[in-house]
Image (tube, rainbow, N blue to C red; front, side):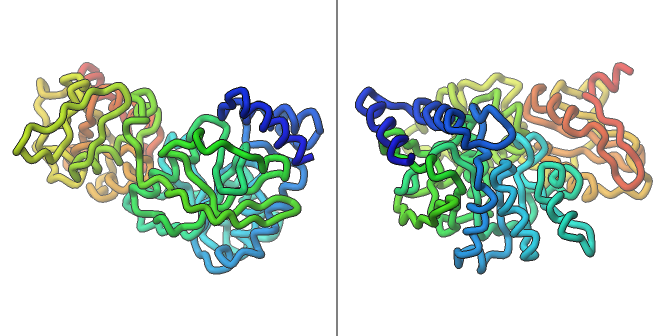
Length: 392
């Protein structure tokens, strides 16, 4: 069966194969051979294959799993068995938030004295919703093992996902926040038919590689020597993606402050003038309102003076109904956990309100959407664009 798939891909390779060709071939083959479980069809998914639970059990044979304390496992259905094993072995289980809308990780925290049935629920997508707490950028997360889903993978450790790029981006973000290093092992779990030859020329700089492949019948140590991504490749990130993923904006602000090149896809970057030190890469493609305020490179900057009525911008967000005993650190912590860190925060505790200053109006609108229903203590905060609040 594996030979048939490889032979088909070999024929495709001679005709100029692409990543999508390989995905479609795997998806079609798994459907035609009835190798998949719910949800189906498997197209455009990380396939939930028959025998996935058995394949997951093979991770117990890896020393890297026995030694690990913190495990990051993708939320894909075929990885459910690994999530359960991590919880049963009392490891810290981190699962990416769906499409990174509200942050990077959620930590699955089973209730005290959880039974086997409860642990099984914690390992499902329902568990991510009901038994998890967000982990902010400021958390000292050190991931010992990364487990990702795949559509196809080669014995050399080269991986192809479903095409949306979230696994690659999650890994790059973990590198940027210091949660993983080049020594952190990466495992993928697939059906035997998903182990195929992948032409090396299809691999890109931002593609994550794997060190171990687990199938229902095999444990493959790839010995992959191709370097893993060293961080976020900002030139691959579009403005649309920045608007959808608030935590990306926070990471970009941090890296820009550190002097790294954070030029986005489609933006034009001028080389620095000879003899002139360039600490923050210029972005000629930015609109004027996108230029960060020089005095507000991070939320950790000192709280500014209250904005006057005429000073409110489209990039400012009003947060009201702050509890009497609320502290600025409480609000900062909540913002970090939700991945909506502003460039600057203006605190008006006596008036039970604060203003959050973002890079542009799109970032502010995204923050308003993300922060709806935010609570400090027992109080639900009022969140709105500052200009709209003023008009009210």
